[in-house]
Length: 388
Ligand SMILES: *Cc1c(COP(=O)(O)O)cnc(C)c1O
Image (cartoon, rainbow, N blue to C red; front, side, top):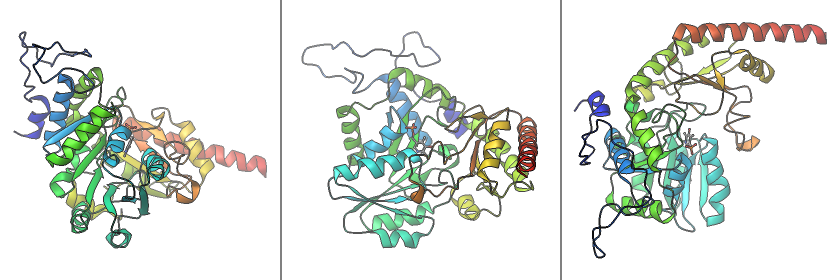
């Protein structure tokens, strides 16, 4: 089945006597048992629920994987993956990760006796050097957040396997619509489904997809034993959001490319980070391993104060963390999503602005940036005159 068809036609495997076109919401904590001795598919929603099964199957198909798991946040999903590890185990992680992942790894894992090495994974030789006999996981984001660095998934997968470690790819930035890490050799794919997968800024959710049934058993155990599975209504909303994944991403990405090119040619912009620009360091590699460049653009201006003023002057970009929403967002990662990363370890410049492009009209979005840059420059000029 073509993936456009797949998004809206998938076998829910649920025998609904009324043949509803949308899977009903099973908003129940418990299921009646046939007999005191019978075991059945569902008994208690923490352990499993039809709405969760459906969204887990759907996302596994989209990621070209065998088994999917839905969690109550992206961080809960990542925490379930590191739950596979034991004391003395070691992780190699990209030094440009989502701030919340950094916090989990840097502040929670040492308490559990798990060691983390932070490396620039865009250069595979850094990973080679970081391996030790206890390394169990390599954890990457590509493109990374917010600098959009590209890591070679296939090369890192081969390297991890040579060292008996698993490769985990956080695929939140591109979504399976644009990149399928399992097909490139990754062992586990993880998502913050809060972003593109749900797409409407109304759900917090996380997803894991993998192929190995032994690891899947452990993940299923953690999901049930630690009670971090996604609740029925959130699963239902996520299923609804997924149906428009292709439409949303294609539209948002087309606009993102236009805006990235506009910013690149703007005299007041210092550097634009977007993998769809030919001068981006990871342009060729991203083109090889992904079907697109995504919907997020970062750029610097050379001045923190000027960047703050641009943000204050935009009207169509909501000042907000997160990305992958229908509405366009603007943020200053160093003060927002990445504030929990200590200064000396933070790779994002202070003046870096991150844009998440929504489904609005592209000309409207460009005009708004144009006036915001102009007004910010005028204010900057006036300020300097006052000081002088
Ligand atoms: C948001 C995000 C997460 C965390 O997901 P939550 O749903 O907020 O818990 C993890 N990785 C990346 C790349 C993210 O953007």
